[in-house]
Length: 261
Image (cartoon, rainbow, N blue to C red; front, side, top):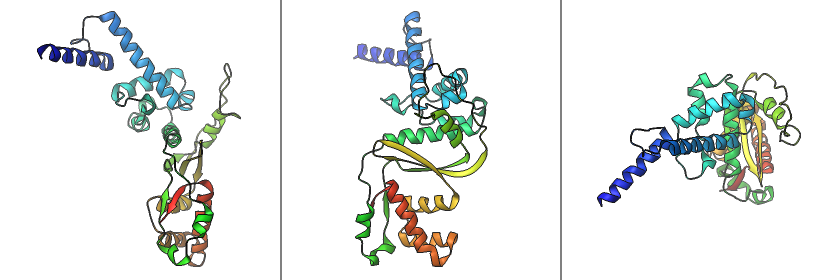
């Protein structure tokens, strides 16, 4: 038993030495240890580059490397899959503006993570317009809509869409050896970012405040009658039901909901 306890302690020390850079309690294999430390760090930084494809290009190699190493030190990977490494990067950037040359990059990081999350969301069958049309009119006021997995609505403070589009290019991929395009300066613009997945394709668009408020209410489970009340604040009582129904039709066309109960 003592032998097993000693082995467990040695393994824990080695883990800390690799992840944290501790040397005091690690096995005395300094040269080999440095190789493991470098491999661990380099692999996770590479994963962060993959998980945030646009952000590293905006920041540049050196600035992103600095940000990634600081993030890795503060939030070591805790999941078996490195696909999820970076889930707190936007939060980290918000708290450490010394690594962020422009605050719009925080919104960009949030957008990229939302797109990644939407891509990996569970599969579900979108609710069709035809299926909803079969619901009796008397049942409509109490209808509550179930969002598709991966649908996200994020408040953002900056107009990051032009930067995103500039870096995506025609095919969404930068060719090897090509220079980065000249990026527009992000401007302050309070809006909401809608992110979802249609089939195998992730999609996004920005919404103004009234449209975002209506969709947010539907996403949190407000009944159709409540959506009409909210719509009345924007378009008046007479047009409220039609406005809510029109918004709902657009949501269904986009495949944002899976059921109505």
